[in-house]
Length: 309
Image (cartoon, rainbow, N blue to C red):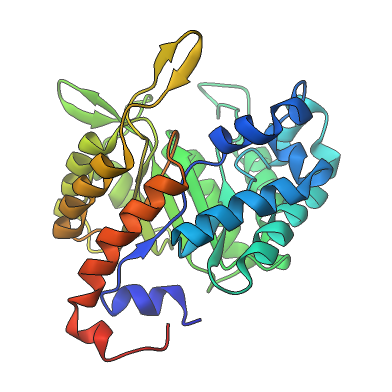
């Protein structure tokens, strides 16, 4: 496959996968009760491979690994920090096996679950070392890119970027922030605006920026418009399938594949380079998005001249 950034720079829109957690709840809930979803990478890697395969068949160009909570700081809450390398390596191995070189493998790097001083008790150096350890094994295991996602603390995100760039100057790095709508616009829960996030991230060595989680696709369209005002970096958008509603104690996400696919037309018009899904999205959502993206890509003259993808 071509380098992912080459494809984006040629104007191609790529499709990322959808939710991991909801599919794990359906297939493996009994296997990780009392521990964390990342433990499935060790105990039942075939389930991780199956989920990755579903998204690849749905048309995903990028598969994220089951390592959202795979940093030592996060795993320590389950007494699994000493298995950081095994857990992350197994996740990438399962995703690569399912891919068969048909999709890029993005190592998912989620929040550590800790707060940096002075808001919490964690030193920046401790958090940096935690991210370094997770990202180092991810790159060593063959990840094609690093996806630092669902961040609300910009300083935490920057520490993860710094750790990545210490290990590799060339691996593509994605950072997505999670925002809430307020009367003053979109901010993270600790008060980081979109413009502030962009200014800091653009100088940190990232390749792709955007937003995921926390919102349905209508708000993510608004967030994408705001990003486009302030940056020329490629954008990634991964919306939830709406805001979940509890029905008989079970969260149900209301946005259908058809609804999200229709809204993807707006993301394409804005100029988003990677479109995927977050909480509540399924292979059906990704397949619907794929169809919309394919129609756009087929109309791009530059892409029609190149078949080496």
